[in-house]
Length: 217
Image 1 (cartoon, rainbow, N blue to C red):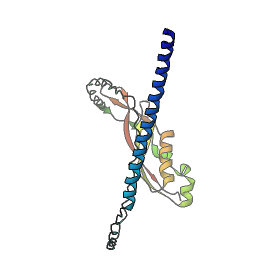
Image 2: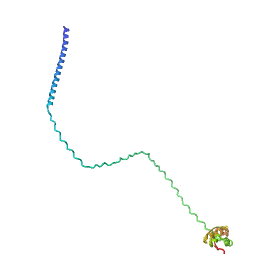
Image 3: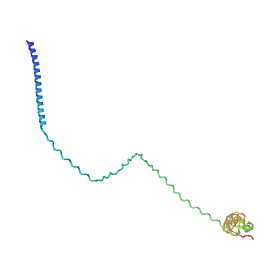
Image 4: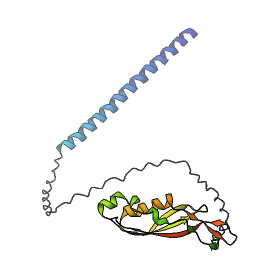
């Protein structure tokens, strides 16, 4: 009896579960069917409602043409030059010390004045007659051919030995041949007794020698 009751209770549970599942299925079908009918009716109402489209807006008026404006192209501006700066090493300037000032030298003393010429106590005197050396035998041939004659005055320097050491023409005859012949003969042939100072010592002196050249007949 107990076994039969236990089997009966198991069958009842199964039956109850099946019945509940059927009720759930029917309820779900009922609910979804009502929802479908409601949606269908609403869609039909929406389809039968005519909506008038609003009239199209009036066309926009075209904008007025722009005035004639001459467009000036913008000035062409050259890009600024790219200046590349390089960091140079610092320049160190070395200022040398100024050179020492040269010593101030005292001006040299003025040269001593030349000694006064010795006082001549006896002038130089020609030995013999100097005119004997200026004769026709010593007449320059070029002056003879040119017919040149005249008077020559020669300034002579007499040495301590009585010889003529220097000769200068102070007055010319107008003939270079006669002037040169006068000094040449005076230095080579004319002799003097030298001049003497206060102590009787021979000294250098100066004297003049006049010579007249005349073409021999």
